[in-house]
Amino acid sequence: MDTDATGDPVDKLKAIQNDDVEYQDEDDDFDDEEEEEDDPITLGFVDKPKNEWSLRRQYFPSKTGGVPAWLDPLNIPSGRSSVCDICGDPLQLLLQVYAPTDKETTFHRMLFVFMCPSMKCLLRDQHEQWKRHPEKPSRSVKVFRCQLPRINPFYSPECPQYNESHEPAGSGAALCDWCGTWKGDKLCSSCRQARYCSEKHQAMSWRTGHKTACQQMKVSSPVFGPNKSGTTSLESHKVGSKNLWPEFEISIEDESEYNRDISEENSLANSLISRNRNDDTMNSLMDNFKGDDDKKSWASFQERIAEAPEQVLR
Image (cartoon, rainbow, N blue to C red):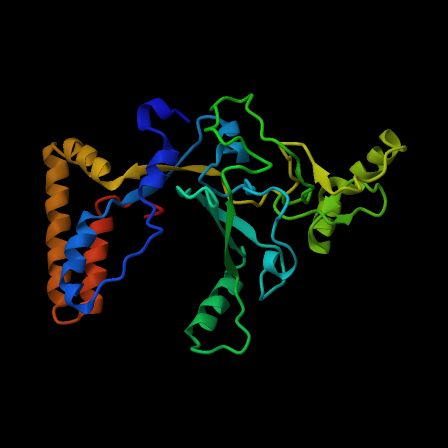
């Protein structure tokens, strides 16, 4: 990541944290909209990473798809937390966002969003959320937050050097050889080398190549047993699955800076015409929602994000 051109992404994210919330009296409600306009807004856009190593965990990446760059590589969610509540299959990483704070005890903070790849499960999840008081909520989308103090066993308290040679301290949990996402607690009973997070991933790996590789691993490493500690120092983990979602870096940009750049680019006549048409459409939409505060707020939000339609985070 080129921090000289865009500024330190860590500093940008720290600038927008609001951990100490001040509650206001009802008399101050009329100022809310004006104050919201003054709050700094950052946007997230997906980009192809300039270097694959920049998405490793020691660089605290914000990214979509691929395997997760676990902030705490040892304490990884397991059991029911790692599977879809509807079909029971392991979840896949949708995105993760690094959102650090200035507090020493929660200096590093990472948010992870996992999702079931089955549309059937997602639709049922949506239906479950419509229920006011479900007896047993079933979720196919799960969000995890991981926090570490500035002084921790895995990372230096100083800002990382953005070069390929930078390595984190300590080892991480041994992960599933198929998905590279969850702990590989299950060993192949034959070679005792391959690890899996679930019987389903073990079966998929067997059908797509491990059946042959298993015999080779037994012949080439007959004296080696499984890693009983369940940890690995390998930073790059090759996985067997070809169905993980594409991996992209999420670049962070201030909305004010983005709007300024867009304004300069829109100096051409055809861009201005397109923008005028868009403004007319949004004005018409706002007129239709007069008298309905909820719909009017939604229309206002749509107008705001239309200025940067490529944003994936706000």
